[in-house]
Image (tube, rainbow, N blue to C red; front, side):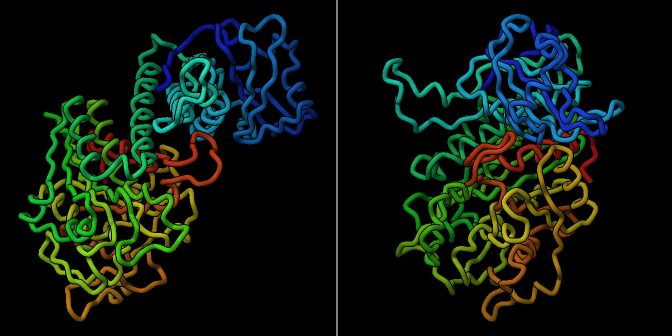
Length: 515
């Protein structure tokens, strides 16, 4: 993880390998098309006031996330490299750049500085919120998953240095002695570290992370941060009647687990239960996925990774809330012991489910975990899952869907997601789609109408949520794993989607404002 420091030094005089400044499109109708963002003044002075003009000559447009590198002048700036990152349309004099713009710009700059030891970020930090945004964006952008990389730099006997994340981030203009600035930076560091924890878990291949090893990770974190933890193995699951989790995991040589990990505070104002889908590998089971759809299925535990990381973050931040995470862990594989299409499972709730498609397995493990989480009577329940391809078709690869049994709570979750910069959209749960899951042999089938499949999945889960408990379902199938080029602070591969939303919800619980 990159180191983070706050610096009141000038961007021009700070010793670093690079200095990052912001540049934007001029919106004032003047002749110059580029303007420098606040924070770049000292660097601009070293260029004789011509930094914007020089960047324009180099082709910079100021577009969001655009990165332009140029050598520092011979004198006036101690760093040898200047990195200008686009902020989009320039903010007016009486306005500040919004947090997500700063977050993405800082992330893009940090990614562009991979292999660099130290960079000074001289982006506009007018208040603690801006400090938080720049710090979080830079830290999230400075990420690389190298656990399985070989030693490619033989001369030094280490991994390729050019792939290493930016080692140290100095926030210029942020004051170490300012309590609000310090608190913002400290929170950003914790949140970024926990997003990285989730990313690492998601990026780990299935032969390195099965239900048992995931549970071991939870136990290790619980010991380190003072969390309670309980792991139900296959024997305990059978004794407890967790038919959904057992049915999904029955075809694998790696048995399933249900993990409860919890943070409690003596002055807790509210309780929040988080439930995560943890399919460490999803082959589809007997309803085998077609060729070309299996290669990234190590990411099907992204929901459990987000829940796990959010609970650890709540503990590290010392939130005055009781936050419990339920990790429903299984590997969905075809074998002689696998659940077959047409089989009927008896769930932990006592309801029976006719399994029409074994690739609709996430809802089965979540159903058991939702019922169990509800027994503790939390003030609200939120589940997170890479649940349906239908949600990707509806919202694309960067936006997750939000469904809920309570309109006010759904609105609150959406508001939180927007606040932290995670793209999300509220989705309905039309009652007429429930009839499609009627089964002639069981209480409900795990499949319904094909059209609106993401909404059908939400309706299925709703059946296992206690009456009267506010509940929201986050389908992160799109943004959980980025198969395209990295952008902003988002890397290729596991993204840690929903971690920041869950952490902010936990903070709202600590404030007594969940709904």
